[in-house]
Length: 222
Image 1 (cartoon, helix red, strand yellow):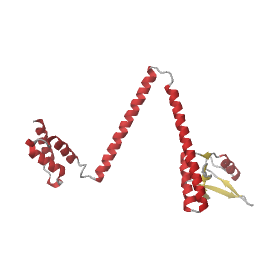
Image 2 (image 1 turned 180 degrees about the vertical axis):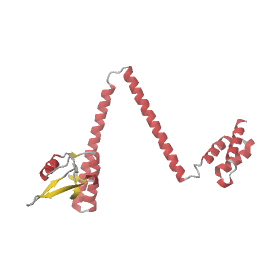
Image 3 (image 1 turned 60 degrees about the vertical axis):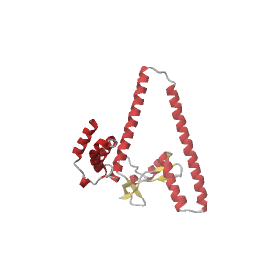
Image 4 (image 1 turned 180 degrees about the horizontal axis):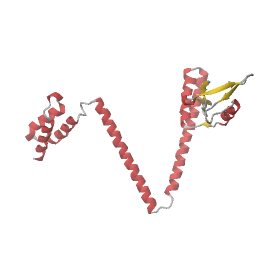
């Protein structure tokens, strides 16, 4: 039984194989009784011989994705910074410059392609069905954006509530809303004082919140 790695992707930017933990593999090899070990891998789809494995590796395409770009920067860090000298410094600067230029060109090409497709779509024939679909799409995008903002606001408030629980207590918040409506009314100073106690005072010294809010509600109606 032999353990090792099977697979990997050739990085097109730094010319190395990216071998990940997910490529870990185990297989069997049998001695032929003379001079060699023969690979006998029972895994479905596995390569059985060294020659077939070499042929498969030769057919692998270079990985030019954004993931490969960022992984190549990580390798550059270890090659050119951790193992650093004056020669590799110059090589690193040239390669980072090349990477930046290539990445910028890829982004510009992608934006131009999207803009061309958008222009073709806008200049296409319009009818009621297409207008209705477009309106539905825009409404869906707006609803999605609104929902995303609401979710972010909820997450922000939850995070703040964990950091400062005393400021986000529901009783204190409700007392603050009633204070906003009654603070300028000199006729209800007693209710205002109780509301201020709920808003800013220690919990163990609070008056009964429901009765205070009920009195505040009657005061607003008068």
